[in-house]
Length: 202
Ligand code: HEM
Ligand code: HEM
Image 1 (cartoon, protein in one colour):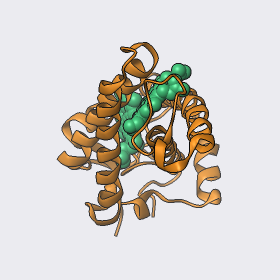
Image 2 (tube, helix red, strand yellow):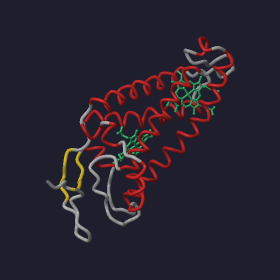
Image 3 (tube, helix red, strand yellow):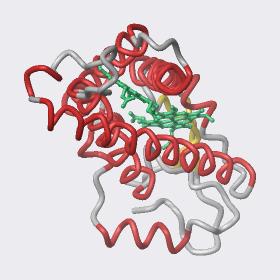
Image 4 (tube, protein in one colour):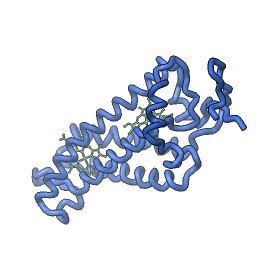
């Protein structure tokens, strides 16, 4: 049940939604991805720091994989894996000028979370195998995968970096859309853990 009858104000309550580790993960991931990106593009020619920050991203993603299986309910993959029907229904109402009060990642946001996590895994793994062919920078697995693969991996690492940037811009744009259009602040819950959500009936 949605806890909302047509036309009526939804019954909302403040709950502890995001656990401390998930919140720490999110902001550490934000810092690490931005740093890795900036170092990759404009950092020193010898990319040691880029590699270290890239390993941090890999570590964070490994944590998220485990947390998605055994973490608290709102953090679990199963709780925000929705089918196409649910995603389309959500999209149908997303422009309504009211907060979603969704108790977790909403169906569209959930699909986006999977997408960005998969792209980041691919970004970091291609980095491990990448050989920039500049006689300076080669990922730690570049020698094992062979020259052809290492050069292809470097090309994909660049393309995926552009995709990562686009996804982050869309992500922040969506958060602003919720803040300005739907009058719902999603950032504060990612900091404090508490969020106003619809009360489930029953
Ligand atoms: C490199 C930058 C960023 C990356 C890679 C990123 C990635 C993510 C990921 C993976 C999640 C899902 C959390 C989970 O369940 O694991 C998420 C959620 C979220 N992010 Fe970011 N994020 C970035 C920057 C930001 C920034 C700058 C903001 C603030 C404006 C922000 C606000 C949020 C919020 C509010 C959520 C929760 C959305 C909801 O309520 O469903 N993120 N982000
Ligand atoms: C999510 C994490 C990562 C991000 C966002 C990222 C981003 C970038 C960016 C923006 C570039 C510059 C591409 C260009 O010249 O247009 C780059 C280059 C590179 N990165 Fe990463 N990277 C990440 C992880 C890693 C990891 C884990 C490694 C290896 C340990 C790595 C190894 C490399 C190498 C060898 C290059 C040079 C490739 C070339 O210039 O062709 N990266 N990275």
